Image 1: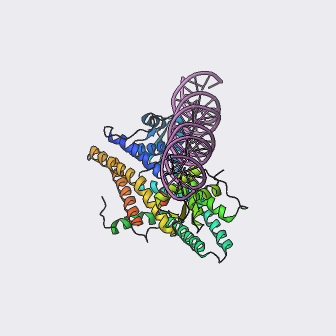
Image 2 (image 1 turned 45 degrees about the horizontal axis):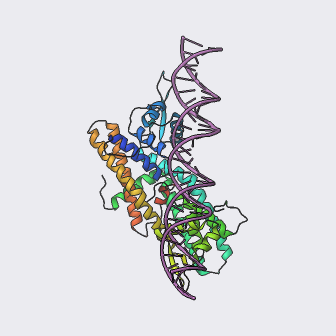
Amino acid sequence: MGVMTISDDMPAIDRFIESWGAMGSVWGINASTARIHALLMMNTDAMSLDTIAKRLRISRGNASMCLKELRGWGVIRLVKEPGDRRDYYVSESDVQKMFLAIVRERKRREFDPVVEVVEETLRSLKEEAGGREDEVQARLEQMEELLSTLKVVGDRFLGSERLAKSLLPLLLRSSGRAKQ
Amino acid sequence: MGVMTISDDMPAIDRFIESWGAMGSVWGINASTARIHALLMMNTDAMSLDTIAKRLRISRGNASMCLKELRGWGVIRLVKEPGDRRDYYVSESDVQKMFLAIVRERKRREFDPVVEVVEETLRSLKEEAGGREDEVQARLEQMEELLSTLKVVGDRFLGSERLAKSLLPLLLRSSGRAKQ
DNA sequence: TGGTAAGTTCAGAAAGATATGAAACATGGG
DNA sequence: CCCATGTTTCATATCTTTCTGAACTTACCA
């Protein structure tokens, strides 16, 4: 059940689902969640929880939690068919938007708080060390710089939908590698 | 013993070590490893495995493995004191360079292979779908675009020391799952 | 009402990641 | 050659994350 290995003789759609699952763990989303996401992206028609769970061979409970998470990221949407009590799900169609939504949210809740603490401790260390210990002071400053760079780039990049979207193709073009 | 919570009344240096440990898990390095790294960054003089393990209250075995990993990332260096059989370790002094070394290496061994499989499956899916199914085709193309953008941004970003200051660490977090 | 077909939650099982400590391995002197 | 000292490896323990399945809730309809 659940996650399987990717082999050549399975249908392309399944290979995609599994590889997207692996992709998920690269950017910090668990495999089941990413697999559901992949499945919905490849299905234009809405799917019920039950169908999804059966298709991916995961429990209904797990599917329910994953769908909740995906709803939380805003990358899927619930649709109701009239005269049917079931909840059906479709993927938002703008893939880049989805991607940004996830990255942004993860940054906000995982990256930002940690960086804040590190910065705070760096400040105390600098104070404490006063002017002494050149080498250490230099490293502290380098680290502060690194952190603030990370923060600024992150904020700039993720701050605005428009900026992010227009920035990406720009980088693409100037890299000299024609896309597609 | 080992990892502790960060509280105001502990010395700034320890607060830094612990917070850098947390930072580590944001970009996919386990806490012990990141803590050792922090300790070495804040110590200009070389430290032996034994001293490190005692200082951080972790086992010598664990310390040994973490040091090995850090050597693998190229962010610490082994130095020998004449007339002493012990191995001493010092951190490379350029923090940004270290950071880049880690991110670059993680990209190479975790991000690139996964992206490659996803791309391959996207290609087969496109072929398979032929011209039919507009909506799905459109999504496939969007995803290909997203992937190639990520790749290009990553390469460009990591290719040049100067540009290379962020984005990927935000995206790349492995939770340690996809080793080597 | 009671029955049923959903959806959600959550305690605990299973899987996975990390850490320990002791045994195996190395090496440099006497 | 053997001891002392230091390092690495690895089976096992611990801690964390993910998943399951059953209990619980809700909404509809006869």
